[in-house]
Amino acid sequence: MRIGVPREVKDGERRVGLTPDGARQLTADGHAVLVAAGAGVAVGFTDADYANAGARVVAANDVWSCDLVVKVKELQPSEYGQLVRGTTVFGFAQINRDPALLAAVLAAGIEVIAYETVRDAAGRLPLLAPMSRIAGRLAPLVGAQVLATDRGGSGVLLPGVDGVPGARVVVLGAGNVGGEAARIAARLGARVTVFSRGDTRRSALARALAAEGYAIAAFPLEDARAARFVDAVSDADLVIGGVLEPGTLSPKLVTRALVAAMRPGSALVDVGIDQGGIAETSRMTKVSEPTYVEYGVVHYAVPNMPSLVARTATLALAQATLPYVRAMAAKGVTGAQAEDAGLTAGAMVRAGAIVHAGLAADAAAHGA
Image (cartoon, rainbow, N blue to C red; front, side, top):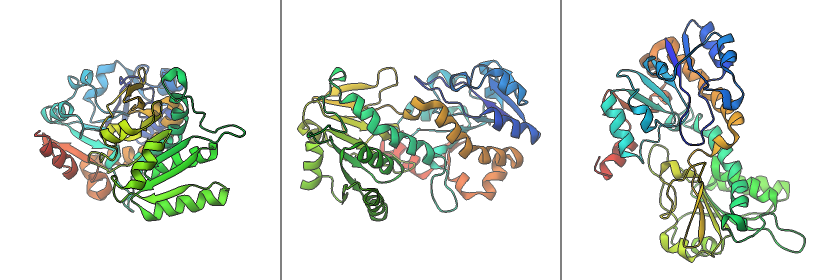
């Protein structure tokens, strides 16, 4: 099989879909690996590293004619014209929120397999999980920065200082994003409250942190209009959104009215913005312009937060995705899907048709 690795073009994106070690394994398997010049430079992988691993370093547009294109972030408008009918693109898709992207991939007649909806035998999300954990760990650190007065924040120091308590942090979700965000915020000295729908994860998180000596408040997210939820969010210095419903848009848990009730200078880090975000006031930002202020609240809504730590994120992502790439290369995309229902679950569109139920529902709801 011919496998292409493009250079990412999304604003601030520095990750790459395949490492030189991955290229070495694929070429040893007998496949041709084409890597766009400069694709890995930002994370310390030179063109020579790929060439020495057996890959061919090619011009940017040459990778798109490959049978399988392995990338990181969703297709960008500048890439639409490069798509070749019948090829498969394997990467984060983020199609649900973007009608123009959906129209482009349907018209191109390609297959898109989304990292965010591939499942393992236990029903977990093995390709999304490492990036979610990284984003979760980054969220309190980013929140600490945007609370600074030079970013429009209230000037609250996340860990506090002697005699002054730490920031009030509300985390929505207790999964890979929310759990990691709560852990880091608590360890930094913030006063943390978690709301989540999953009783098991929420309880396990609270117990684990208590064992480390960190007490958090943890409540079920039964009704985002309930007084306890409204009071916690409106009193928070920092709200971190980490609720994900794979393959469909995020629920809008924080209303516009609730954002308006938050204290001026407080902050909202909406980690799930690539699936629409959890706040009615959230709109996507980018690494080069990460924040905006609405109702006096600093919003941070960058969809590719792991790119801030691009080398670590690349190594973690490639470690998770390479077995799937090798399987598709060895058996063909259709053959690999026939043997792995979890990989099939990752398919969003194929040959001009929507094949994922969540995407179909979102497209219908938006009249696409």
